Image 1 (cartoon, helix red, strand yellow):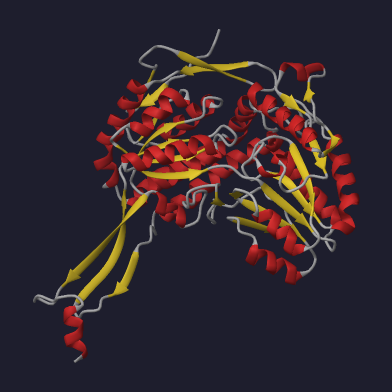
Image 2 (tube, helix red, strand yellow):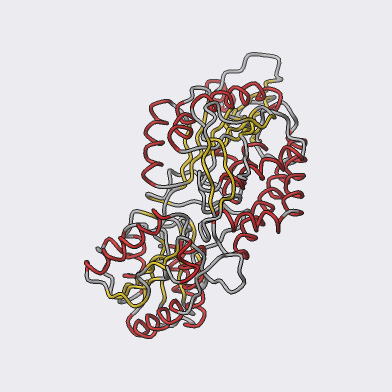
Length: 499
């Protein structure tokens, strides 16, 4: 019997207005996880109304009290880390240690945002006039719409939900259709922690119609979207037409630079983890290695050898190194890029095929793939593949390596391996990405710093942590308090003071 889950609207668990459902399956085994509502515009409208009705009371709830609820959520997530991690692996596919890390990031983000509840910093500055107080505070936006991806189905939502709630907004959340059951379990924790009805609403379903309806709804003041560049650009255009704030976190084409003076063993570990962790399905995944000539052949050989030994399988098994891709379309896309790379003249060193042996035939697997002799203009070196596919390029020196890193339409994460501190600082100065690593891979972030990128990776907002995350979900309000007891005219009266 199929286990059925529901939308969460105004504090109640209810089916879609249409009665239709969509199924969630384990990408490693084909196991049916459950069925969730296939929502449409009617469900979104009901959720938005609930969020709008809850907004006034929630925004007037003191920020420290809002933070206490967030803290309680983080505590509950920590207590259920193993259970949530196992569900995450079953529904999304990543190996269990990575799934537990995904859950831990939600805990970390909850604790960080809870701490902000007694800060929520504004600005206090001197006035140009006597007996006058000048300051700025943050105001919530209102109802915000959150559209989140399947590859980090609890971490990325936590990046959005916790700061949005802390700053006094109410929420309608549309999770990815590939990982809706975990979203249901996450929302249940908010309910248990005492979040008032209507403050957080969950609507599951496909991007069209549910996600599109959320973008279109006139009472939704902001859309925060993490996902593909194609959809992100559509949302940006429509958001501009509707006058909505839009925060985008999109793709990446991240590179690890390895110089002749690098520790090759350390670099190799970083490359394998960054390229094939989460089966390459991270926006920060390494899809390019840019290496200088003296070590190029040795590094390429060692990367290919390590990649060939990675074990595919169910992420719940301790013997598995690399789990499945999220669905059949993802497998097909990666294989299309393999065929494209071969046709462009790149040298396929290892992989390049679907994983179909034995139990793998039940899931969506692709063998870790490494190309050498990739040139900068090849599509293999320019376009996001979002799978276990790695391209190795050659650069004559650090200057060319940095130019190659910056010469793509993405700017999320970059890394350099070198033992020369001067070159490390040169890279920190000249790599035009939102995240820079020295002697570490391109994946991984910490909640006390902002997460985001440049160029086609986003639209300038930062999520994932750090004080800038509050800017995405708030408006600035400047306040002047004049206690002089007389009319003072700014700028005009300052000239009189000088005289």
